[in-house]
Amino acid sequence: MKPAATEPDRPLTLDQLSAIDLLVSGKNDLETATALGTHRVTVSRWRLYHVEFRAELARRRSEVWGAAADRLRALLPQALSVLAEQLEAEETADRRAAAVALLRLAGPLTAEPAGPTAAADILLAEVEAERARTQTANEATVDRLSGRESLEETSRRVRARLDEMNNCPS
Figure 1 (cartoon, rainbow, N blue to C red):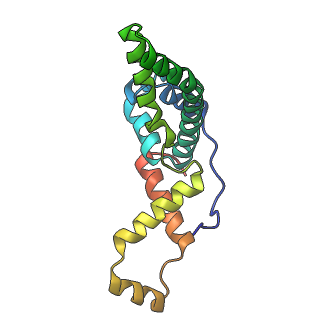
Figure 2 (figure 1 turned 90 degrees about the horizontal axis):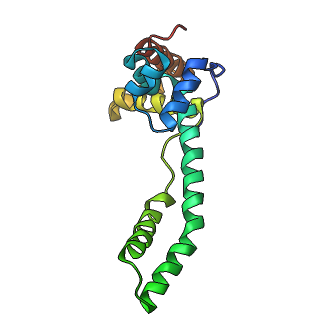
Figure 3 (figure 1 turned 180 degrees about the vertical axis):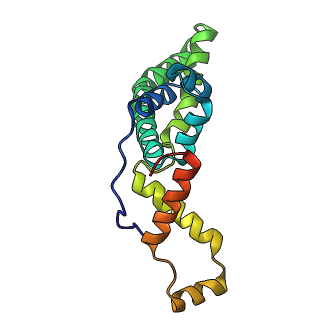
């Protein structure tokens, strides 16, 4: 179930886009904050509570992961050839170890990082989690009969909560 967009995505700042670049390149929150001249908590809040930041970070990580997986897949035929040669003739242990290590890495790279890459999808997941936390079996029936808060109202409330946690102006 996908909610109607209750508001447009908010554009990311230059600092937020730079933070995404640094995080995707392997920096942690502290290293990213230091490079940007901001506090680590700011970067952590963006990563945890800023819907658009989370979506763009997930999208970029997915791109990087896909590119790395493609490069690894391109090396697999060579690794298989090295192993085949090793089965027929002895060479160096280092070469065989490298080929085996490469083949072992191929397994985990078939799965992409989980997580939505659109802000609306992240917001929907937060809304669904919020609703699940506040609902019991009996409440579900009562809510349906009494006019439970709409998805859009819940979405606005969850967005406001995330913004407050992020110290992000509305």
